[in-house]
Image 1 (tube, rainbow, N blue to C red):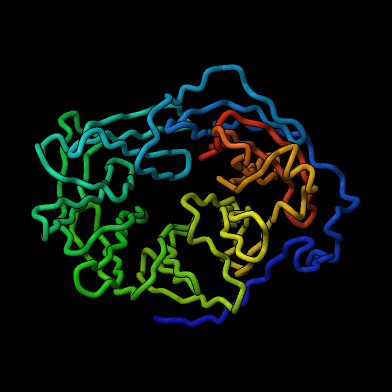
Image 2 (tube, rainbow, N blue to C red):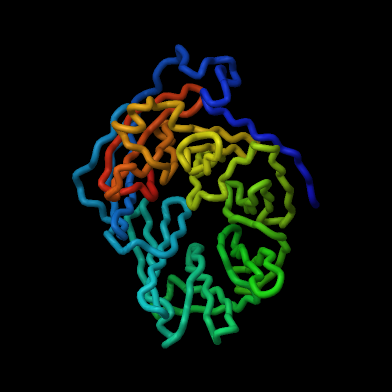
Length: 381
């Protein structure tokens, strides 16, 4: 069943759009509600610097954040070509030679990792890995092989993570795989027909049998796919998105109004809180002088809230104290009810910082932490 829904996003940006009151009538500057009880959370923050991926541990309370001097169990490594996150799990793919690579899965909740050499069976070849995904017991890599100068073959390789023999299965595709998402015992594969139509399609694979069971034509200009906590698949375009029920395969369209696009198509990582709100870096357009700003999108309410730096930091803070160049990461600390904003510094040299702010309806800047690296991803415990 196709349901069409015309949609106008409200951009609540403190000052930029002249908003002065929240929906319940309170002012955006705060109210007389009692302060929440002091809580604590532990962060593992991944940093990118000079081609490497490193990590530090942070201890966070509602009003104070400090660096934990303990060494993080997450290993330093060359920055990976591909990444995949699902809750506390991080999947990585690193290319080692033109036809070999290594995958690693790290569980930040248990501080456990699993590594595996991959593609060692292909010998001398010209291989490009395009996307990775993971189920409970299988790791998937979508890749392409240049057979001749005019012919390319496309596959998804599925590795059994419970096998000591590195067992795998290759599933051949007739279109280039761009991105993959695992949900509901299915692998959703965004593909592109580069040879004939330049149109996108969505292949659905049953991971129990490794058989392709469904295909949807998606037209042109698909930007990316991702899953929501409700196990829906979001197929995003610049001017709209499609919400696909991963169980029934029914879908509906959400069309944006003019100049109200939530612009989550450029964000590589999206964090969802317990209420289903999505935290991401947004391509700012005319909403800020910074190329990417923090934003929160509510799929139930069709509401985007933008947190432009100009609206909660002074010019002196932005330009001289914190030296903000652009947003690199956005997440949320549910224990302390704070938005976590990683950013790159304009002074260069691979430096960055982490801002924490209170969200609407009572937005407030809490603190900043300067970092020897650019925040890439954060895991909150």
